[in-house]
Image (tube, rainbow, N blue to C red):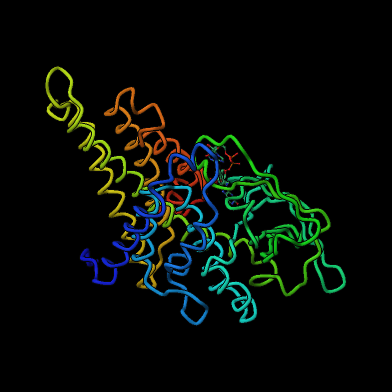
Length: 383
Ligand code: FAD
C-alpha cells in the first residue's frame, strides 16, 4: 500500500477541512444544544460534491476513490459527527447501495437527487426487537396484486425524520432456513409511513434520528432493490463499507481530541507552568496520538483494499472495532487534559466523548465486530 496521498486526495482533504472550518465549526455548539443540525447543510454538502463521492458522474456523482471518501469523512468527523453521519448514511449506506444494486430506473430516480442533496436517504434495518440479530427482523412485505403491502417498525434510524427515501429491509418469505429478507426503496411520503423523532440522545444530538412505523404501506414491486429474498446480503454489503466510513469518522474524532488536548496543555498553567510540562499530561497526549495513527492506518488499509477490488469486510470490522474504541479512549483522555473545563460544553472535548460513544454500538457493536473477525479466522460462527 502506498501511504503517500495523491494530489487529488490532498486537494479533497483540504477542501473538506476548509468546508468544516467555514460551514460547520462555527455552529457545532449551537446545533448540539438545539438537538438539530441546520438542514441547509445537506445542500451545501451536495454542492461541494461530498454526497457524491465514489458515485459515477453519469448519475450526478463526483467520482473519486474510497481513500478520498475516507479523508472527507475523517474531516467531517473532526468537525461534527452529526454532519459526518448524514453523509455516511445518505451517501455511504443508501446512494452507494443504489449504485451497486439498483436498476437503471432506480439509479436515475434516486442518485442525482441523493448526490446533490436534493434528497436525503436513510437506512431502515434495526427494529425495536432486533438489533444485533438483524436477520430476524419482523417487518413484513406481503405481495398483493403486483404491489407489496408493508407492516412493521424501524428503530434508531439516522436521518429518519429528514429522509425522502428509506432503504427498507422487510421479510418477504417465511420458508424455514431461508433468510427471506428483501430490500426496498420507499419514499417517506408514502401513505401509512409515519416518523417520530427520538430525542434525548447522549451524543450525535444534532442528528435527526427517528422511529419509523409502517402501517399497510403499499409499494410497487419495482421498488425492490436487488433480488427478492437477497436483501440481507444487500444490507451486509452496505454495512461492510459503512464500517469503513464509521472508522474514518472515528479517526476524525480522535484527531480533534488530539488537537484540542495539545492546544489546551500548552496554554493552561498550573503550579506555575503549562501543564504540557508534566509527564503525566504528556502520557495522556501520547496515548491519544498513538490511537489516532493506528486507527487511521487501519482505515486507510480498508479503503485501499476496496479501491483495488479485494476482499475487505474483515478488515473493515477490524478498523471499525479499533477506531471506535480508540475514539472513546482519545476523547476521554482529552477530557482529562481539560480537567473540569472538559466537562462543560463550551469546550469541545465533552461532545467528542458523547459522540464517540455510539460508534462502538451502531453498524454492529464491538462484540459483533469481534464475532465477525473470529468467524473469519476460525471458520466457526459464534453468534
Ligand atoms: P442489542 O443487539 O440488543 O445488544 C445489546 C448488547 O448485547 C450489546 O452489548 C451487544 O454487543 C450484545 N450482544 C448481542 N448479541 C450478542 C452476541 N451474539 N454475542 C455477544 N454479545 C452480544 N440502525 C439502522 O438500521 N439504521 C440506522 O441508521 C441506525 N442509526 C443508529 C443511530 C444511533 C444513534 C443508534 C444508537 C443506533 C442506530 N442504529 C441504526 C441501530 C444500531 O445499529 C443498533 O443499536 C445496534 O446494531 C445494536 O442493536 P441493539 O441496540 O438492539 O442492541
